[in-house]
Length: 373
Image 1 (spheres, rainbow, N blue to C red):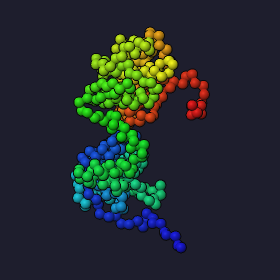
Image 2: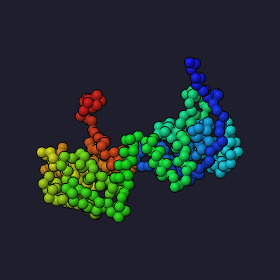
Image 3: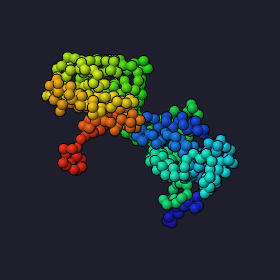
Image 4: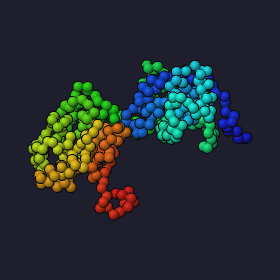
């Protein structure tokens, strides 16, 4: 049997008619819903440059199946004035212009050298990775010809009406997001998206309940007490929880005394103090909850160590934790450089993972030793 000749770029089918053009407002509004909080690398998929990339791809008709493609530098050449010209003829004329060598473009969206981050961060490492953009088959990697198009099912999310958007988005996420990513989204929605708009109910390990004011910090606190404590402590107990330095949710003075801790100095105490009563020597766990600011800094850690020593408690039986809702959020990026060494970082959206900030000044081994530990 004679092998079928593979179609080359040179004899590719002629472009089909241009697709409908969603508004910029629609793209800006729907991208964060298609890629909700909790996704790794979400920022690259929902920021301004991502929305404008999607718009330009629609503008030139770069949608899977239409035999039209885009190259990154075309995104840089769009302007607000051009977006108002939405007739098929205006779009076809701009496609020709955008492929020319003309660089005098008043009001262009981006400088020409922005094409590299558009290609690498937004398209290849962002949309292509999650199946939202497809690459032109048979095109050599060194070719300057347009090579990217919106995947048909992704494009449909911006062309459907509001009544069907949610269902189509759910289908797309289940198809294109990994099992781990979907699980992460579910946990983030459960733990950090908020439920009751009036109170956040926190259930302690012993079954008692406390109500906290609604908000991101309370939702992270709930996740720490109900998930982190059970997951990482043998016999967890709650000594202290506060919503602020003024409002204490719970304060178990008797339990604190039993483990050699004075909780009278409220000004230096963190948001949460847990205790693990399972080991022979109880372990105190000091947790700072960060929704916007305030991680476990070195100064706070040293003040807590001093408080422990004052009560006769050995600091080696203590753990210091900073809890965030998700590692993709701005709060973590803002606070990461201030987090104390020899402490832990935990995310409510990924409860089975923990980050260790370890000081290695006394470690004389190599990476291989750490990999085996």
